Image 1 (cartoon, rainbow, N blue to C red):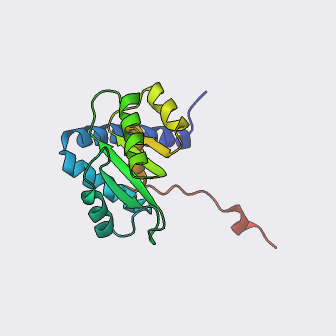
Image 2 (spheres, rainbow, N blue to C red):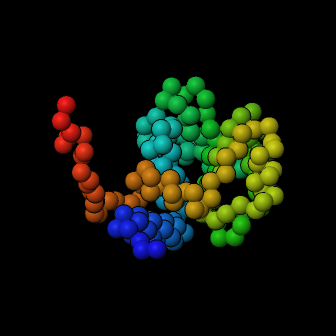
Image 3 (tube, one colour):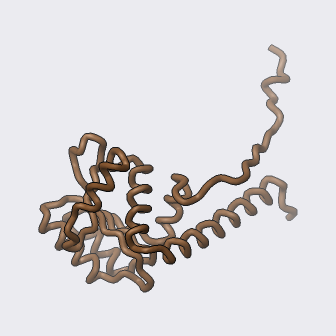
Length: 174
């Protein structure tokens, strides 16, 4: 079966997006931990957390890393907070790291946490995160770069194609 131009365009777009994601992840692994934490702040603010960039940055820098890199407001009013751990990591993040983070959350009487890593999480880590009382969201490197692409963090559009089709309603007489 022959590929339609629409399918070819969709496939090419997906390939470009996959290549971009791969390059972006390499870029994240090459920067400093401080810069990585700043990118995480930018992303969380772009996703609607933490109010302004300045407020979010202040919150992240404030924590004395007892297994927590920062605290960010869940909403602009600061009614609830989310504890954040951002790690530039090469190997798989295992259950012990998530247990440490869960313990740190309990030490703060925190209900919610996000653990972001440039690598991936073991099945045991994911299982543990899903079973603890605190709500812990794990964001691996692949998911992180997809969020960055979706929210234009560290990427910029460089070409835009608009595909048009005939508007049959326009040609229909009433």
